Image (cartoon, rainbow, N blue to C red; front, side, top):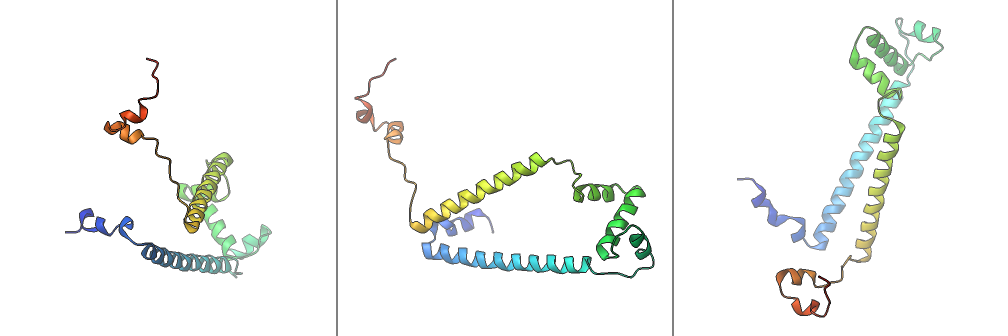
Length: 161
């Protein structure tokens, strides 16, 4: 039966440093391949969208508006036509992509700040691990005191109760 109990012994805390490094390396390579695929997709899509079209339906109207007769212009005009016909989803898409969404610039700035902070933290952790540094905290005896084993450690401190 597949459940957490069957896999927990194979967790990252049980792996050697070299195993973890190999797993991270494979993940990084897969991530790079996925990013390249997405970049190629975007590049192809942008080339197609900027391609000139010769459509008897769209070309005269687009040129009358002073626009290039491209697939992108025709798609945008078709979306506007749908919105004018009452299609709310078309209107929402137009508003979102034209910068007229309900999200403010402050929302965007806040999101960018969060992302920047997370990236900085990730880079700092990565650098520390590469240098072999650890964040060890000095033992002040608190945990022993909770267990009742450190009465002599804190016996010399005065209490004002």
